[in-house]
Length: 510
Image (cartoon, rainbow, N blue to C red; front, side, top):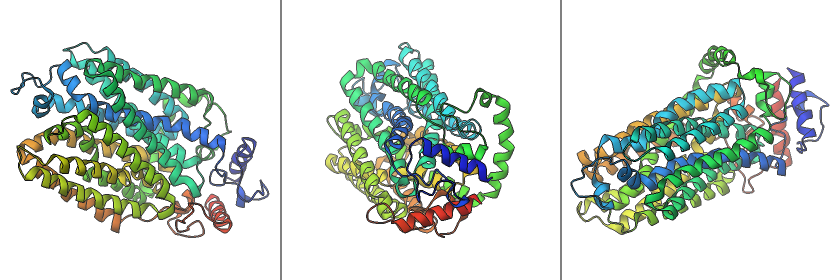
């Protein structure tokens, strides 16, 4: 309807956003506020607050990467270990409990992805972020309080954190995509991925500073950041204008109303979501394909076990090398932040996935030469190249491209299913990674991963459309149209491009 669109535009004007065209509410051609505003300090603050979810995601992902040996010692996982209790000996010990300590977060993320996807569409993006912060806090507390030798509470904390992680990642990406102008949407969504990398580096540095004996302090930091974000979301962050317009309800600075918490509203939306998913099956399948493509390169598993891989490769200080992994991850994401709106999404996906394939070839060569004495420098170089290549491609672009492909009616639940798919496959990969080492050897396992990475490369090359420089409404229409422009060298379109984008938006609204 015309009026909710104009009401959202008027609210955006009052909030201090600069609008494209500047005509205000003189006609329906300029009533889609979300794609009309340009970058402002207020918008930057909102992106910052939402991207704390990315920080929490990265922190919880890399927490086990850096503390696996300490957790293994504290809860006596895989004990007794034939080689003793040294770090090198524990790295070679393999058992289901150790693998579950790593991949248990994926179980929670599976359910969290779908549950938060439905909640984000029914209750709003803000409520979903608030609930995820509460779960992050509870999960961190459970891990901190787990007594030595009693691993059950620790596993529960990992699963609870996984639920929060699965919901926060997709919700934050959807929120930022909806409030961002088309000309900088790619870079603003990449800020969330940059926050993921910052969280990963922070977890690694915190683990190194605290030491293996104080790994519980490292776990508790996650809860502190979740409480900080909870305050910002509750008192500063507004609801997504696109979501409010879709709900045809008045804008509210601090929430969508207590009545939105009614469970009946969430359940009532399930049938609507299924109907909409059937209507938009093609972009939905492409979005799920993005999740599977990232699974094909086995990136999360390689990140989880990077310390173990480096220990097996003969690196003397794997924890310090892990800090290097985090720094390279950050640099890769910063590179994507710079180029994503200049060269487009597909170019980065193709280049990054090609680098992943070459990195696996390097790991195969490092371990195949002599399984008992791998080529350490080659393994380390290949691992760092892998992390960089992953982070200029699927690490940050999976959710960006999936969120751009999914239309507004199914964006929340669609991203939830994308996350659920990703974490379900990631759980299987995490539970079988060390087993594959035993069955196929390190070189054989990395060779298998290189072959599956080729599938991701083919998907990016032949299946994905370019979504850069187009409004979300123009992408949903499925044609380049007026809202499409090739990524430019400056990362922002000309005035005519912006006017065309606004015109396309208004056509979609009508």
